[in-house]
Amino acid sequence: MARLRALAAAATIASMAITVGWALPASAGTSAGSSTYSEPTWWQKFLTVSAPGFQPPAGPGKTGSISVGSNVDMSNEPGPQSETSIAMRGYFSSDGGSSWGAVDLPLPPALNGSGTDFGSDPAVAWDTRGNVYYSYIVVFFNHNMHAVTGTEMAVARSSDAGQTWTSTYFNFNSGTGKFNDKPYLAVDTNPGSPFRNTVYVAWDNASNRSGKSSANNVILVSRSTDGGRTFSTPVVASGTGSGPNSVIGADPFVAPDGTLHVAWHDVQNSAIVEASSADGGQSFGPTTTISATQVAYTVAIPAQASRQALVYPACGADTSGGPNRGTLYCSWMDETSSNGTDIFLSRSTDNGVSWSRPLRVNDDPAGVANDQFNQWLAVDPSDGSVNLSWNDTRNDPAHLSTDIFYARSTDGGLSFTKNVQVTTAPTNETCCGADLGNQYGDYEGIAAIDGSIHPIWTDRRAAVASLDEEIFTATITVK
Image 1 (tube, helix red, strand yellow):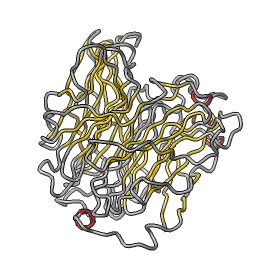
Image 2: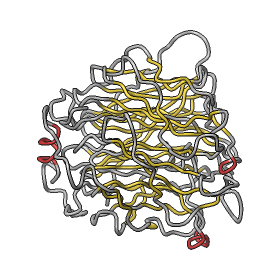
Image 3: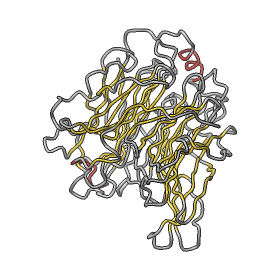
Image 4: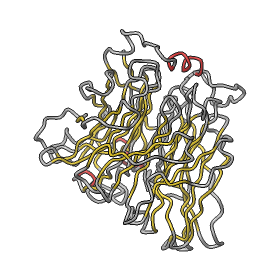
């Protein structure tokens, strides 16, 4: 189960802390309480920049300098912002992320009168009608929380920009059966797609081993064509071949023509892989390898030694009208013999049939065993730029404290800008009252639209240490 992650879908952000999530509309001028419009305020602009042949203008705002705004503590709540919580928390902003409101996400009743349940692993995405969707898992426990008695998937929907939510629950598993874990969410917002506004959720369904990936699990995908009110019977995206399977970290993303891609970490074969669906998530083709990995599952880097850093893909598609329209991108963390862990990216220009040789994104000196981990990726739909942020230990010789770093590509993932430090103070999750069971969690997040980039991260700098782990964000602008 993950502590924190996010998805860019028209500048949308999701996160978890105590399990916490938030959603940020793309237009700061859109009132958080308004839901009377039939299409979001950014939709006409999105149609323009997504049209085939559109060329984003060069110059200020697209290819110039990168500036980082103030670090904002958007959770600002006491107690560790970690994944194991009895309440889902949603945050919303109507002023571009400068201030935040908060609300609890719905949870179903416990399975029995003395039991309890909690929500975990959120993701957020918007459709073109102004609705926002929030996926998560519900975990049911017995009365003393010593045993899992069941899990199910949940997707909440909101028509008032995240102020109120209604949830749909599905794929319940009980007892020692399968465990729903690590879901992620995507909505098809492409103007010409036959599946426009279809909501997709992908997750791994593992045998119940404390929520860990096991040798008997598959990637499942479910879809909704009625605005999140109902979800289809899940289909297998990861194949049904004989022999053991161990998969984790599903990430769905949609190409401009409506093709649904789902990437995940094939733990059994130590590889980042993906499969695609041309019929709106009803069936999937063969699995394609994006890249082999040195790390089979997790790695105990110094900064995340107790929880360990998870290998997972964070992907996206260029839906702009620029020259790289349709290009697919996937990022992941891996370990090399002399560099510690690094962030890598691969691209596909043939709809996922083949993938490029991995490119190292972080630019700290080679041969120095710094660690980079918990990356996320967002493709800006206005100009096709590829944006990544991650945790980075390069500023600490002991590799225990981390900062958030950011990089951007404007040439279709062939190269990246000089890495930019986002945080104004480091975090150390190895000492001094840290939540050692969760530390940074499994993911961070980032969203991007029109040159405005919003990374999110777990932060326990000295100024907020009395509140334990907090959720921070900042606005990055390209001038």
